[in-house]
Image (cartoon, rainbow, N blue to C red; front, side, top):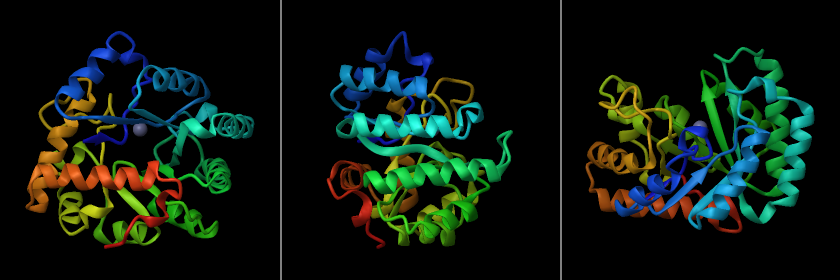
Length: 263
Ligand SMILES: [Zn+2]
């Protein structure tokens, strides 16, 4: 199984990252994607990817860190992508967040520049959303984005999900589905094709139901897979096998996300 979204570069993993990765490995979690957040993080991600063979990385400016959402940092991102093109499998985590203390119009300027970089580099994107699906879809359509990607921590309706899938995107399925109260998302997920899903934990954040207040780690991907198998009325092996294949198709094949199927 693959954890397609875990922030293993965050300080909270500094003391025991080897242990965290080894323990996950013992439970069959064999690959990890560490998305980017800020320029400082990019350097650390490179170090993590060098230390661990099965860690993939992406670079991007995350809307949670609005101080870093500047044009000069997008210029830095361009240099990083050019310099480390071979080491990078996506642009992200990028997106729009209505709860962040920065006007959406400003976020949109930086987001659209990052989207353009991904298009130029022929890389898929890892998209962060919060009450912004309509804007994300607007920007993807405006630049005719053609390399696909993943909607991180997907929540929303079946219709929204299908719109992304039709544009070549996969949906990141994480701890949210372990909460009974996430009724709308759980119902939407039930109706969607497993061929368009990736598993993710968002470690160290988004703890699963029953683990609130604790640091989340990639080993929990096994429980996300169990919840998903239950919702889809299938078995964990099928979930693991198909989501691994989706990940490889999206992030590890040279022609990237264009093949993400819609059915
Ligand atoms: Zn994240």
